[in-house]
Image 1 (cartoon, helix red, strand yellow):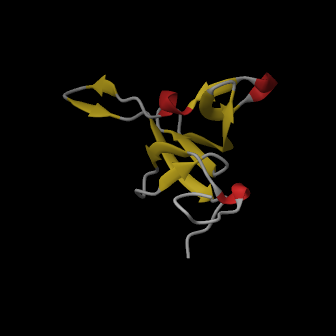
Image 2 (tube, helix red, strand yellow):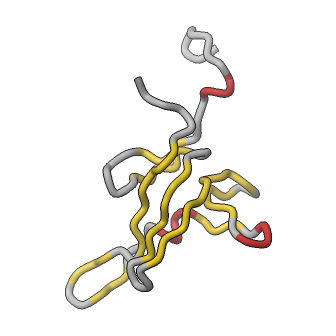
Amino acid sequence: MVAGYEVAPESVGINTGVLDKNGQEIFVGDVIRIYDKDVDDSSDCEVVFEKSVIGILGDFGRITALSFFTCGYYHGYKDEYEYELEIIGKVYHED
């Protein structure tokens, strides 16, 4: 029960606090495309919550924190982001 309403436990998602390039909230379980602007390459990854970290599960079982991809760096005279995130698969669809 949540606030007096019964909910299906599998429908409760963890909001990462990160928005994708379209302003959509990213949740644990979503599949995102991470585009690296510096090398003009992308990869598709599932957002996970493992070992107390919200991130993506990479090669060899290593987790990279999602915050790594959302930190800007100083480039010239303005802050720019090296990575662009886009949700390409949502765990729970909004009606």
